[in-house]
Amino acid sequence: MGDHGKWCKHTNYEQATRIPILISGPGIKPGQRTSALIETVDLYPTLLELTGQSLPETGIAGMGLDGKSVVPVLKDPSQKVNEYVFHAYPRSEKSDDTKRKLIGRAVRNDRYRLVEWKEPNDPAEKAAIELYDYQTDPLEKKNLAKENPELVAQLRAVLAKLPEAKPQMGGEGAPESGYEKKEKKKKKKDKAGDGE
Image 1 (cartoon, rainbow, N blue to C red):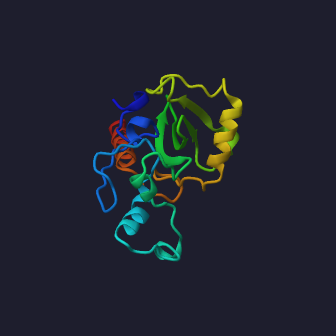
Image 2 (image 1 turned 120 degrees about the vertical axis):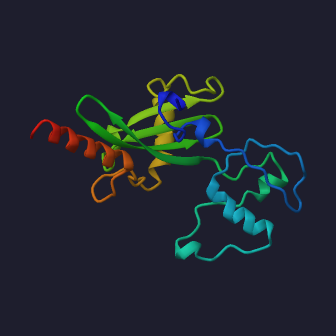
């Protein structure tokens, strides 16, 4: 069982998204720790800076870079390079006769995580929202979204600056997942067994 009762190890919650990292290099004191927020996209510019390389003018394939070098944090663990970090991961939900594919997007700052769940291309108003406070609830057990509308609005405004996450679990034009293929095959077999 994964976070929040989900059957997987990949989620938009702290236990799946907080990844320990160890970096050693010139000018970095051994044994330092930091709680600074960094993302995996920060590794590329960080490694370039540590090795004395310059960042490409246009990023990879002319698309620019999303990441930032975290060398300032490595040299002084009290520094910050990111005010917020982001994560996106899909999930499916099944009820009796329907299966919904949701895209989850999360934004986290030093204290809070906001997770937004919605079907691809649905308007933001249709999203289910979760808000967790790591000072009082490090295990993300109590959703505080309804009690904190101003904070939710502030964090959703940050999230709204990002492009929508693209569905990876099917959807129009997307390849079927292994699960979907298996279910389709099973239904076909069941129909054949019923004589239809």
